[in-house]
Image (cartoon, rainbow, N blue to C red; front, side):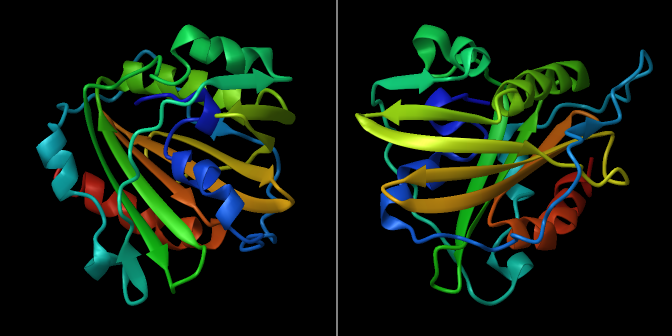
Length: 231
């Protein structure tokens, strides 16, 4: 899991970098979920499953046939190496340190897919990771705690200031062994994008779905089901 402080990690890179070209996304404004970020902290009896290779994870990603009509694969953006500064959130700044544009955490096996929907600014991204249950749990805890530890802060990437507001959300407790969720609002140049992100750990598998809130809610169950089907 490569953590980019500028993009708040876990698949939100595209949302922040594309902000100046996006219109305000009000999809999912109805999601006013109470502020509970995660549930199901593993006990000493953590359920472990065998770690999966990146190739195996790739085969378990959602594709167009899973999503339905109107979804198109989104071209991968070139890796960005802009100078990054986080203002107003020391915990998030410390998470990246001098490696803000390179990443401070990594899981050994990963796969990712990005889609746009209906020719609009609505997007959905899925990321799969595999490692020991404890490392997945500790890593995601650290990231989500940092990202939601400050209700508002500012990120300056490549000289462009972006205001960020974060809100913890409750995640579906019936899914997987642990759950995390948050709502992020990125504002730049008078335009805003709302991104929901939900992470589910199932044994040694981590499923992260990010994007327009309504699309995340629509496809989360399906993403976990396909990813964990052969675990």
